[in-house]
Length: 176
Image (cartoon, rainbow, N blue to C red; front, top):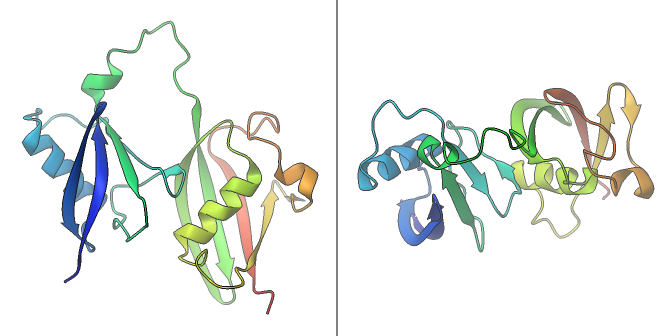
């Protein structure tokens, strides 16, 4: 089994770790809990991938990504946030990807300043298609409205007033 080294930032403290490519986010969080001596009842974790520009779910494998930085925050860190401050600048999106005859659904968490074009790129990365010589095109539909022109794709989730748990349909088309 191949190993990979990544940069890991846990509650602001950075270190490098070596892990097996089949390691899941849940296993990584268990490791962090062990090395940081955190309580077992700590359930409010986030794991943000800097390369994919999104939060990862616990069941996902940590794929081999060049220059990957995983940022993990525990509820012990987030408890320090002033309760009067905005809860989050992130929203969850329900994403359904259609690639030919294959369909995949997942939930991702994005910064509200993320553009639709960045989301399309993160979908290609999630589907492991961004490294192709001629990457496919990702058509985005939100509430049955298509967002494929340059102007709409450059706008952020906040500018488009996209709300938490909005459904996004992504249709991958090969341009070859």
